[in-house]
Image (cartoon, rainbow, N blue to C red; front, side, top):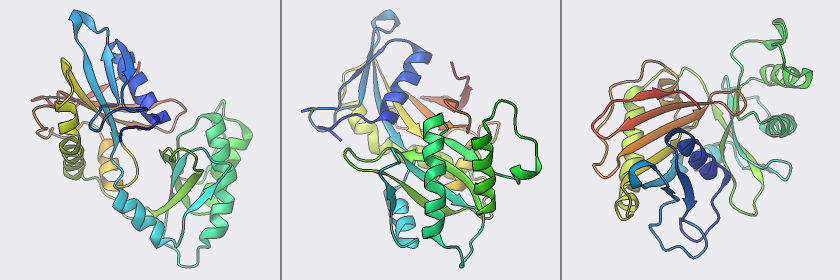
Amino acid sequence: MAGRDLDAREIAAADLVTSIIGGRAVPKDGGDAPEKTVDFLIEDLPNLRTAALEVTSIADPKVVSQLRAAFGRTWSSPDLSLIWAVALSRSDPNQNITRLAGTMIPLLVMFEREGETKVEIDYSPGYRAKPAGMKDEMHEARITMFDNGVSRAQVWNTPEQGKHGEIVFMIREGVSSDPGLLNDLVVDRAEKKVEKLRDTEATERHLFIWMDSTYPSAELAFATLPPPPAPSIPKDVDVVWLVEPTGWPNQVRIWRLRQLGEWEVVDQP
């Protein structure tokens, strides 16, 4: 979208890509930029190369709307600066979502303060020793999540300018890995962005996709190694970056797909 400020996740994406390939990311899609302007142009690459960079997300707005409607409302808070997806480990008709939102908001505020973007609870942390280096309050937060039937809290997106952060609840039951869906989603995002990339004068064109919890089976496929056979992406997309926070502060999982190539796992710099 042209004519607006780039958000924190777009800036983080540019910083990550330039830390891997080099160069300097120059913001383009802001202020009075025309429609179909890419988010960044990466300059100062070796051999006088430039790279157009467009940042997007797996998140499906229709799914987000359905989730909000399913739980009756949006839970926003002036104390939150991000949009969080909070997954319930079971479907419980007696679950008081309003009370749960009140319980989760202080925990999410704490996670934001500590730089945690993804917290997963697959066991009761109350019956295991606190991990070395973890603060007591962070360990207690995980116990509280487990006791309230929450299996994961993950940053989903940044709110629109001037709006508060919020919580989107979802059910996470019986999820299985679906690499085919993962590839289909990547191709769908590439097809939606290819025209913008094609219209940009650059030596190469990169699409950066943030993975999130909209499609749990695709997310599980992304967390499973080795990567599946790669899909065919539009010819005017030279490189796709698929990235997701791993649960540790400032740590991400990175896959890269080059045109006519296969998925490759990239170490975080």
